[in-house]
Length: 277
Ligand SMILES: [Zn+2]
Image (cartoon, rainbow, N blue to C red; front, side):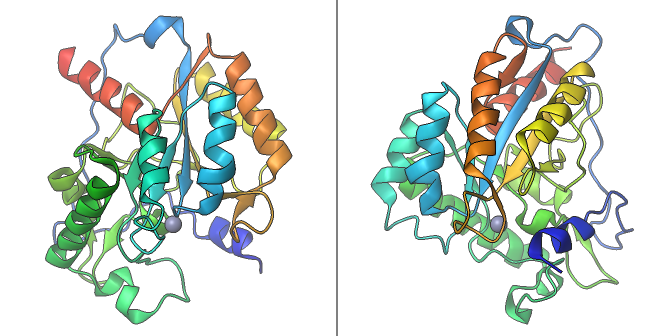
């Protein structure tokens, strides 16, 4: 089984019951009078994981060529400091650099080393690791306000019989979290900032993604796409370069209907709208 099909199989929309810090966070709502800015019908965020050189060399320039900006979730082992100036400049141009942990621990990856298995993480270890990852990111881009991109879309840590939901820990350190792979759009009328939900775009086609986006904005929603590499050889999970370029060109042509922006910008807008209603 390929990595892409394996990851598709780990999609979980039903949350397991937690025993300790196990309650998930409560949804909030923007209220009835909500409208997206500038007459847009809905929103899209393009999030790219793992801090790849490909993001600096190809993805960010292509986004900018289309007049768009994205979110880059980079982990601490991705050589951030070695390319500090390039990442700093990328953020200065309007992209978001988000927290993707220090060591990329996972729960749903069966090949993960025990040391990095989220089953072996506790509340304090997780928080300290994310705090340090935030400090590392701040050294790179000087920013203090951060969103979290869940590794492997996992939302629970700790042993199977004493799981802790990250929605209880994320608010201590982050504005919002991309959360689990739901393959659904975020509905501003009922959403959880600390587990927004995302659709995987790796291995997809432009036509399929356009259909997903149209369905999302048809319902007034916000579709958060997760991507890894762009182009073969950049990551085991990737979107073909031509499909990616078509997606960006199309989003640029739809800017009056679709607000495409980094996750942080849109999350802040929705959270503020929910507070003001
Ligand atoms: Zn990752």
